[in-house]
Length: 229
Image (cartoon, rainbow, N blue to C red; front, side):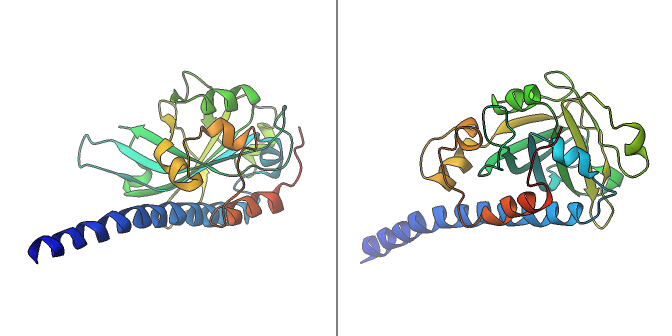
């Protein structure tokens, strides 16, 4: 009898764990969509011209420190890119991504920060999609200009513009030079039901957007339906 009960518990746990993992990923997609909706609702925080030029957008909601003192700061989020050979077409399905901010920490002493990254060049997009890369070394990255500062910086020639929002604050440019980006392969497999690369998801159109990912794509499609250089 005890053996039967143990087997039943193991069976329930085996079925429950994948469901919990999927719920966490769905929450990640939903939270990313809301973070992006909030920042794009205020044109002064991310100028329209930079969004229109972007080849990809990455969102990392609720990035937190994982240890006290010298501990690093890690987060999980998503990337959505424009489809097509030149990355100028409609927005793709989202791929899961990870960010390692290392000992840069989070802003303003808070324990939770939202990050939004605009990938402005196709070269930068290809480097990010190729796998683990370090910003500032493998691809140029600067704090994204906002408001009046954006006027004097509209000719900026960088791969990635980075923005952040500390909990309860406003979005602003944030330096992430030295941070690492990498694909979240396990999460991508969980979302799409097979081993699949981020490049296949966002460049080759090999998958359809899941229901959980549609709000995120809808936010971008509404905010910037066409690529404009």
